[in-house]
Amino acid sequence: MATHPVPSDPIAAGATQRWVTGAIPRPYLLFLGDATEPAYAKTAFGLREWAPERCIGEFRCPGGTVSVGLPAMRPAEAHAAGARALVIGVANEGGIILPAWVPLLVEALQAGLDLVSGLHVALGDIPELHATAMALGRRLIDVRRPPAHLPVGTGQKRAGKRLLTVGTDCALGKKYTALAIARAFAARGIDSDFRATGQTGILLAGSGMPMDAVPADFEAGAAEILSPAASPDHWDIIEGQGSLLHPSYSAVSLGLLHGSQPDLFVVCDQPGRRHMLGLPDFPIPTIERIIAVTLDFGRLTNPAICCAGVSLNTAHLSEPEAARLLLSESERLGLPCADPIRGGARFEELIDRCLG
Image (cartoon, rainbow, N blue to C red; front, top):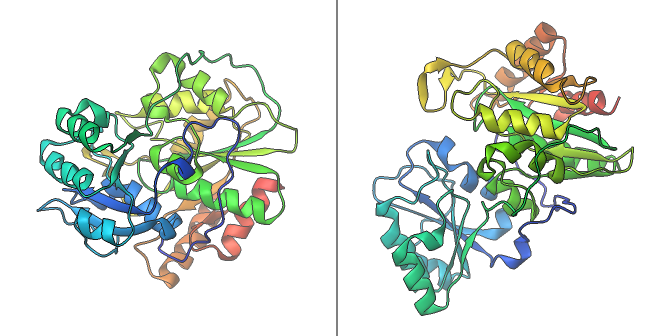
């Protein structure tokens, strides 16, 4: 999404608490690994943009080219500057800790930093990290661990209102859109909660459900727990995951859709992206197709589901270019189209449609 100042007010979170950000030592040194594609560093970018007061510096492997614009620091420098944890800010394919990272993560432990990760592979499963943390009394904190004994989904209607962000692909603005909508609702005095479904959202909100770490049979049940029954005028703004038409991650998206039972959804897209992230043989589906399949699948658990509008990630466009695109797409689709990070009248129109 576009880079603009973001308010530092807290994101509300409800009774599904899994991790409390206050229990994770701050500030952070953001670890960027060997990433050369910014989309794989969305955790680091999310923390830098939405919680800048918690981020002191960045640290990467030789050969890594991604930067979030923070000072480059070795762990000892970051600790001297006040950092108390190194957060792995990259999410590679498979969510693994690469061998080349391990010496650098050991260095962080030796410098006095705890490690925080949202990857699929647990920090404690790496023998060198486990041994070093035990010897030094450092903590290894994994936020991508779903609670035990999750139920299967029931499909039964729950009280309250729900909005889900859905996407044409991965890593293009579903989390940012949900965060922006949640803050806009709060600014209008609407009783609402942001419901995090990924590691960055959980780190920001202090609670949530790591949906892509949930076994497939329990995806819908986990989504039902994430967004429990509430008062009739309460809104849950649910962070979407993946894409219903993504050949790798559609299972998570579908379980989240069925369990969330959203009344409204907002489609997120990045204009100009030609193929699925990491999958050059799979072109990006159109916004219209995502609307159609979301309506089709979503009606299973909420026959009244409807599309509230479209969120476009225009970070790569100038202000005039973005304005022209938002206007033309809104006229073409007959829906509000906005970049929530740019805000403005078009974003307010999207919020009006959600609450209208």
